[in-house]
Length: 490
Image: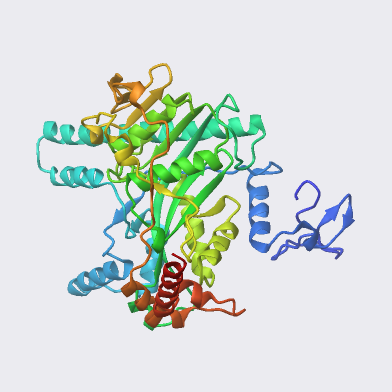
């Protein structure tokens, strides 16, 4: 904007004087135009003017965010009002003049802006908190004890930085690969159709409840609406994420059977045809970090779907990655829209951001789209478990060593190997059996019909209430009539 325009104008008077208020003119090729042509607001305009005064006619560069080392945090319970009350009590006891709360805040912000109140946080690293507590309590101890405790925390943070650097490097490589191959979205591709490597991350999100209304009625706060789970697989290189929407009637488990089934469906229907896959996920034992997931990835390599797989777990307490970003966009859109059915939820996910894509696991009427298979028993008779899985962070599977897993705790450690499949000839070639969805119990259907049905918003009278909260008695009558008809035919 500064290249094509002028920042200020002089007064039209004969005798000039310094302006108290700046006047800005807008020109293109020395022709005056209005400010709306530049599509710039007052805030952005003031920032441009201040940048021009300070740096001259130099393009503005985006500054990456970073942690300030001078920030000092007070406990979350010690607000500025709490500190002011302490100051007021001490000043009155000494007989000093007490300033008002507003003046106290202004002095604080001008003289000590680096001292702030810590905001409440969740999902923090317990090891970091424990180490910092130990360090705080070692004030009066010897230097050797202090040094040992600081060294312990330093080693932990070094490992965390190594894992974060690995994740960032993999995602950056995925972006460059997608740009080079001209890939801009998910597409169903045959295995080995592209000689490239791709990075994916997957995770569960906190479930939501349907129906949902941004103008929430009071009574529904104390009720339990129909549940909808979220499981996402994200490809940062595109970037896009497939969000599996799991209805309560189709939620069999959140364990390894569901994780393996959703990943298998993703690779089959959304895979990019890569030969090498890099995966990141959190270190949750019941879902990801267990023998069944390792058996599945080893089986994919043995069967020739992939040439190699690298599975990396994020350190406990430091598991924020791309899936959480996409989930956050979904949750923001979910809070702003009226969501009555699963189809409405899928529409909200698709419109939440360009990076989100919805995939229904099943419909509310019981039809299954993404089947959950019995993967545990499928491999249990032919595979051996790896001991000490929880203590390992990195796993690798290679077609040159079929049925073998290579593992290590840190990137700098030496790799160890273990044969998961002792006899490759006994591997099952067919798909594991499908677990039928449990559906909703009669008591749950009755609860939804009596308590939740009244809160469903259906502006177009599309029958949303009958889809999400049907009358269980009518369904039971239809089922009994169908049974009688089948008996008559026999």
